[in-house]
Length: 246
Image 1 (cartoon, rainbow, N blue to C red):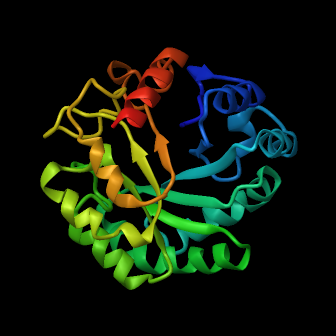
Image 2: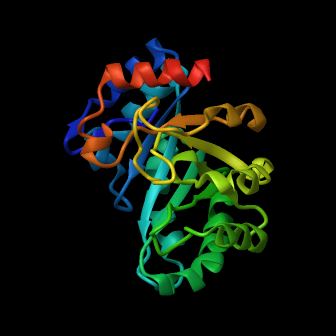
């Protein structure tokens, strides 16, 4: 599940980890929007939060939302700034969700390759998440394939809610590169609504074809979507039940 560590809906990390463990969530995703500020996002000492994760058996995973400034090695710098907290939290899976100007696209392959070297040297499984249509970076299917072809060791995070129905088959072909899948609903052909399950029309049965890759229930986004600041325990648990049933 996506941890509710957002300004409008912050939960104490130990409370959120306990909720996840009690209801059968295997992992909690932390989202970092500012490099080097994970402790500020959690409002807690990463060492203490890491100990709570270890005691619970729930895996912490990290999404780094990186606003690319079109300067080389932007992604590597962001990763290095987070390495201390990553180690303290016991995080093994890290991925970058890149956003920014279109001219940063020409730098993505080199940037991800440089960051991957850092990740591999510290034992981190490192990936990239694609964007929904309308964004300027990694929003097109061919851009995703080109990046993964250019950086062979890079893993991929597939967001079903970012995916047009006609592109599902091409993304399924990337199953061997997956480190995570994000699951939430959207009223296709519109994407990126991050709705609780059952409020859109995403076909979650495709998860049967992905093996045992971890799936993060990522209810989030706009207030109308029931996202950060508006998601509730009940919405998460209902969506979890629907995901299991699917």
